[in-house]
Amino acid sequence: MLRTDKRKSDEMRKVFLQRRFQLYPAGSAIIEVGNTKVVCAATVEESVPFFLKGTGTGWLTAEYSLLPGATKIRAKREVKSVSGRTAEIQRLIGRALRTVTDLSALGERTIKIDCDVLQADGGTRTASVTGAFVALVEACETIYEPGGIFPVKDFVAAISAGISESGEKILDLNFAEDSSALADCNVVMTGAGELVEVQITGEKKSFTRQDLNEILDLTEKGIEELISLQKDALGRDLVWRVGRVG
Figure (cartoon, rainbow, N blue to C red):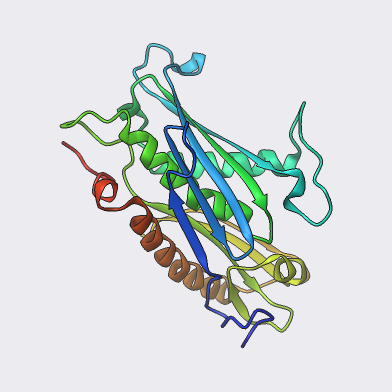
């Protein structure tokens, strides 16, 4: 099956991932997945939430924002409170990154991840997870002490998949595909191939266990490709730090 943008069913959109995108954060990256563009930044703060004070353990949290010009219809700024969708995505990003972070290796520090969507064409939450990981590794390098435990234990990335109107299983949905999909799914997976999160919904019809298995096979293929791109973005100076002890 060839899709509207001429991709095969198991083909991702073109991905661009570059670190050191911003000057001031401890870590930063920009990720472009097709027409979706997200800037990710990681800031290190020498403090922790009250429930972690005195424990020697750190914390990681995330914020997500859709900028007003990111969509065809202007998105309203969320100034005083965030929408339910935004809160859900923030929690997803935080959970995904905490899964591969040794919080005790952070000491009593907090890493704050900011993901700002410059342009949205489907897959903003999955792109945020994938790009934020690169920013996280870069930030952890600024606090890592040689001979110690590097705080990031493994790679993690995310991608979407779904069932098209014609019943085909497709990888990496753009906005048009997501809007018309019979079912859509977001998957977060580690470099070791372990699942962190699977969010799947039958939008217009139910789906079978076999459908789910085929979707997971597709996303595993896509995430392996994304992790390879993360390694390229980190480069020789940082890629070997991930999972390092001593």
